[in-house]
Image 1: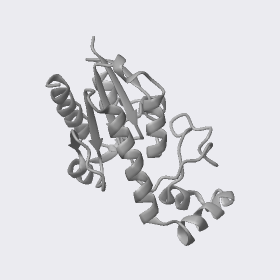
Image 2: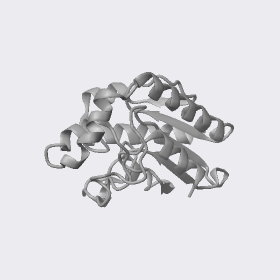
Image 3: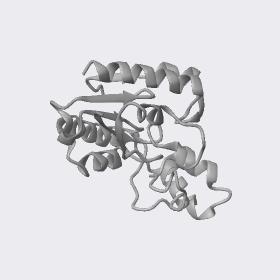
Length: 193
């Protein structure tokens, strides 16, 4: 079996650690020997760390699912650190706002996003990390997976932004039909590498 490395955020994490229905990464595991290092809620910096943690030349294929530039790396998430799926999450505004009423200890993080967070700076840092990821994977059989609009243009990339707009669900943020479509498209692209 060919070896496939998957790195990324919740769009590529193994959700079966918490939910029963398999997503596209689990479907690919039927066809490849999959090593999935993806972590739900992680920042682009953490994705970079995933890639650094292994010898990339030991894999026949690599998929990297990229994340929002507005996730801020933290050593330990203040409220999700014990969650089996989101235990290695980083901070993002929408998640903090959704939980601040039940977790008042994160109010200062919400205040930071509302009063001080600079999106231009975040975009700049994200672009630097993306360039480094592209440099690290240059010449390797890699597919960069995009699930929502991003400023950095990876090559080669497979863009599921339109599918995400129409087929959101509870498995890797997609419904069952979208997971099947992603699996089929990725498998086809991997076979062409």
